[in-house]
Length: 377
View 1 (spheres, rainbow, N blue to C red):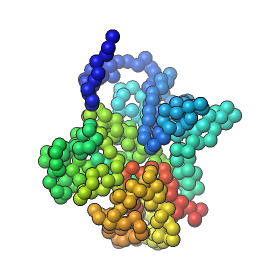
View 2 (cartoon, one colour; view 1 turned 120 degrees about the vertical axis):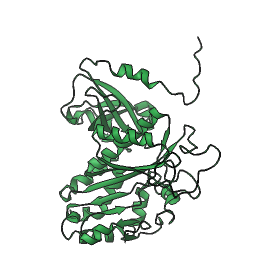
View 3 (cartoon, rainbow, N blue to C red; view 1 turned 90 degrees about the horizontal axis):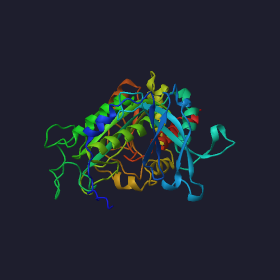
View 4 (cartoon, rainbow, N blue to C red; view 1 turned 60 degrees about the horizontal axis):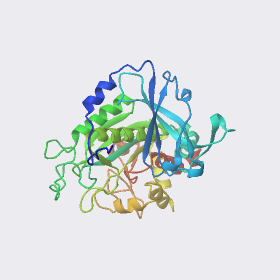
C-alpha cells in the first residue's frame, strides 16, 4: 500500500493534539531531554519517569546515537546525556512534565555514573570550570537574544512581500500595528512559555528590521545564564514549530541595508555593582582591550570562529568594526557600551555588543569571565 506524500510544511491540527494532552498520565512524568547537537543545533527526545525528580541529581543518565548528530562515529556511536537543569514543560502542562537540559559525555564504565570525558561539543564544561573559579565575584549576565522570523521557505522574512521588500527601516523598532509588527503572536506565546518554564525572561521588543525581534534573559548568575539562554532558544523553536514559521539566529539574515542580529551580553560582578564599582568596570575595559584580546573574543563570539561577525560587525547599523576594540558611554557604535546611568552612579554593568545572535552562551560568558575576572582569582 502506497502512503500519500504530504506537501511541504503541512501543519497538524493542534486542537486534535490538545484532546490527548488532557488525558491522565497515571502518575508518570514525561521528561524532555535537550542537548546541543554536532553543529550547534538543539536536539531532544522524551523519557518516561515513574515520579517527579526531587533534584537534577535524581534524573537518570540517558544516551543517544551520536553518529546521527555528528558527535560520534558509527562504530562507537553512544553518547551519554547528563542532566544539568530542569524547567517546567509548557507544551505538556497540567502534570509535572519537565524539560531537562543536558550536556554530553563519552561512556566509561569505570567513571562516575558511567560518564567518561566530555565530548568536544560540550562547551558547558569549559564555562562551568570558569564560573566555579570566579564564583566569589558573583557574575551576573543579562543576554539580549535577537532573532528573525521566516516563512517556511526559509527565504522570506515573516510578513515581508513574497516578491520584494517592505518599506525602509524606521517604523519597526518597538512598533505596533499590522503594517509594522510581524509575528507578535509568536513572540507573546514564547514570552509566556518562558515564564511558565521558569526562565528569567526580563522583556521583549520588536527590532529594527521587520520580522526581527528580541528578548532578554537575566540577570542570571554564572552557569545558569548559559543554561537559561539555551532553554529559551529551545522554547522559541518549539513555539515557532506550532505556528508554522521558522526562526533564524543568523547574524546577517538578509543582505543589503538591513539590521544585523546580535546577542549583546550585559555583565557585572559584585565589585562592579558595589559603591565605587566604576573602577572595576574600567579595569575590565583595559583587559578587554589588551593586545590580542579583540581577536580572541571575536573568534569566540560566533560558531564560525569569527566569520559570521565579519559579516555583521562592519561599523554600520549600530555595530563597531570587528577589527578593533572600542568602548564608550552610551555609544552603540562601540564594541562595549557603558550605560549612561552606570557612569553617573559610578557602579553598575557594561554591555559587550560583539557576540553574534548565533553565539554559544557557554563560550561567550566563559570567555568574558576568563578575560575580565579570572586574573583576580
